[in-house]
Length: 313
Image 1 (tube, one colour):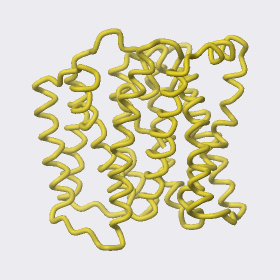
Image 2 (cartoon, one colour; image 1 turned 45 degrees about the vertical axis):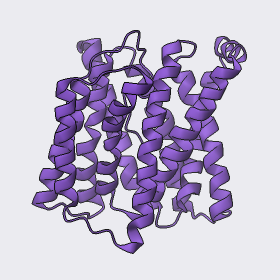
Image 3 (tube, helix red, strand yellow; image 1 turned 90 degrees about the vertical axis):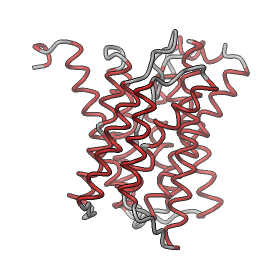
């Protein structure tokens, strides 16, 4: 069947399949968090994922390239690993331990809006009129979803963690663009190196805050599946699709997770979504997508690990 598809259409289906895998991660994470401490869960997942992807860096040409990197580039890779994995993924797991997956999904979608603002000063990118209007649509949708805003004391940690995750995710997206603009490393190399660095931070944080976890066989099965299939395989397939898909198309496909996650959360996690919340989520999703559709192309922008913002888990 694949032989009858155009390369671009096949790559689109490949990318859409990856977003489905990443969306199912949210369900598995919520289930696993019943028994696994959040930071240890995230650390084990990405550490095992890094081990699975490590052979990709053992190719002689890639090893030679890594040895020739400047201290400045290594510093940026370390910072990218800390921002995207240690902070973004760590806070996401913590947020999911306290809040519904639908709520965390909506808050994290604000990353695209925040990146648009940060890109003005940090990357010299100017949002278009459509993007500014789309930000307004997103904010109206978000307000409709959360109105009236009442945060129980037990949820404060979750909201604070996800808010920090949005900032870290936006920072990692901006930094990821800058690293890939330099053209020294491929998306695969950036992904694997930053994942290895970030997973070390997650593991260290888990040991300090949570101690050594005692995990059941089912917990290890969830961790292993997330690491092998939804991390190593999914990131490999995603980077493979980027060889064919234009950045805008990959971004649009990635945005479908904002719809996929709530559907899966309602079906498999029993989360509820009222009419007002559903309409708010729809408006926020339209605003997020329009922000990406309305952007002007910055010059010489490579397809980075998160181009422009990759929602993954």
